[in-house]
Length: 139
Image (cartoon, rainbow, N blue to C red; front, side, top):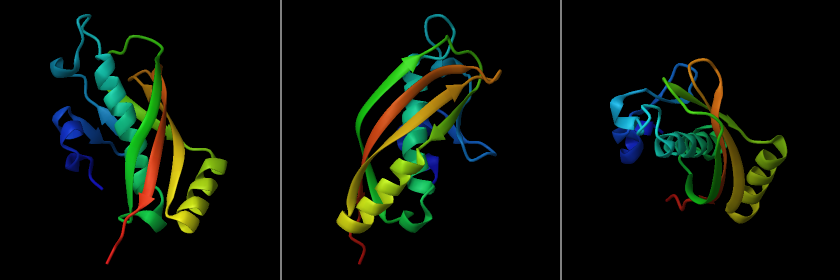
């Protein structure tokens, strides 16, 4: 999947970097009233990264699943300035549960942890995103 296929993410300048992580360039269009990166832009980057990870990191399900965000929480740690990068984590236990549930029932719920860092590799925010994942009917 290409992030450019998600109109809202593409419109806001989210791209895939050389490490296959999602990034957001620091531009006027994503700034807040203090000339930093707007909280909404950081949330968009984190949410997009969690969904992108699910759609690309499980080879056996690529092109066969659909995802819907069910729940999220985010914590902002410091004002963000400069380009931002996402870092996604899913525990091995949750990965195994996802695979088992998709294979057995065709659907699952999984929690994805995302950290956003600035150009100095300092965390600006982190969030948990709980996704409903379902196998698609493919003819």
